Length: 167
Image (tube, rainbow, N blue to C red; front, side, top):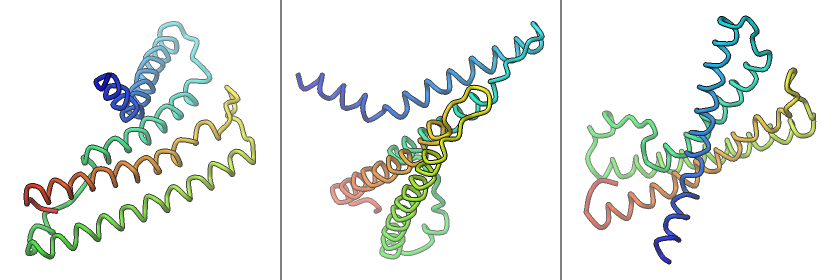
């Protein structure tokens, strides 16, 4: 029973990666079909760019949360490592707080933009998809990034305390 619960938790935890993978497959397939239909058959898809744009948006934002969760976001440590360990710890805490503050700020701003899209009810020109559906992902993704980053950093702090490594 515990294994099933762990599997479901892992699936939920990686839901953003599964969705990003799905949109990547959609992007590759429709791009391939678009090239085929344009150059071989001579009848291009008029809606291709809209779906590609939406897919790229969703792929980028959904995979960013996973990068924060796994600690594989960009970090430049070369300069920080020149300082003594106690200064490095202070810099690490400052970076943690600044990163979380920026992610919460971005969540707030992206939510405002999303609500503006909802209020305006604009639709894409060809497929008539609401722009709110296309651009809903930044607000959700920024919130997921903040939670993922906090979760990752808490794990790093626990590992540091247990093993005596860098924080």
